[in-house]
Length: 113
Length: 114
Image 1 (cartoon, each protein chain N blue to C red):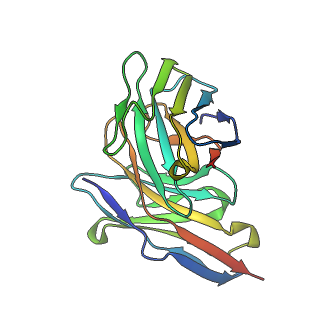
Image 2 (cartoon, rainbow over the protein chains, first blue to last red):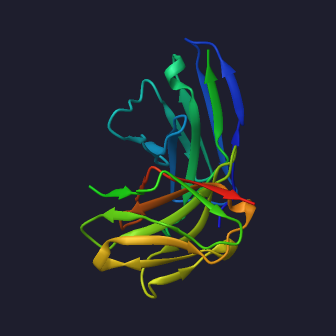
Image 3 (cartoon, each protein chain N blue to C red):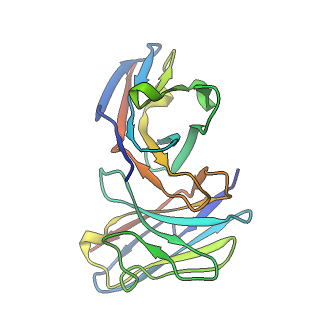
């Protein structure tokens, strides 16, 4: 199994600003994913972070709003840009080592005022 | 596209009682199925998974799930619930292949009364 950490664990931000969330895996993983969990909701996949190439975004999510980096096989960042209160959510990253099992980080709780 | 349905939004059981959380999926090929648990203020923890083989799978914390292809179901069970099992439970399905992504159900919130 993989152990995944995220920073920051929580943050309160002003609208119009940007926040970058870091995701670190303790072992190399093939794929990394970013999810959003809005209050009281299930998880929605934002994008797949591909090492060495651009992220693959799901419908409704765009690179300008959620730029993602994946510089190596153990690290990824998600930036939430030009934030509004509607961006208040939990953002979770996950990693998959190719065995189809995804391990999740603890999440970043974001509140936008 | 695959989808997952968890018909029960909220379930309350007494400590020591048995538990069954329902999950139905829609997917044309062989699914990979998962149950995750999210405790308040925590991330997701994998309880168990089904890829192939024995349709009754054992997981952590005394949970088990049974894959029934004829019913497109993957229900989670526990014979005796503990107060610490109170949490949100998510069923998820993954497409085959290494570049997979999970589709989650809407979750079932479990409340345990003492």
